[in-house]
Length: 171
Image (cartoon, rainbow, N blue to C red):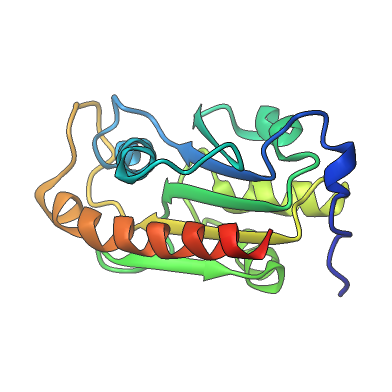
């Protein structure tokens, strides 16, 4: 399996080379964790013009155009891969995403892994991708994270900070 070609930064049409994409729904309890992580990560420091932060909500495949011509992508989301609620999962490398995205029922609706698989297949995927996800406990109509997912936010935020800092040094 070959990786997609690295985008030519001179052809980026003014896009930041790194996209941080938060996914989820603020009205569905733990599904909001990706959006909360996005907000907190953005406020940690001045990331400069090399990083764009995007609230992708639950738009799914419509987000493909935002991935085009990026060198790196960091996705923040609630992901249900059979881990206990509150488990922080960091996934890097296309071989891991493609394997997980093809597993039936591997993630909740708004599936970050399926978005990455689609981007890879049609050649729109950045060379470097990572997902920081937290296993949800509740996905019901209610505002606010469950206690177990709220306790996992600092660990997930630290992982996202580490990954984004690394991406910045690589561009």
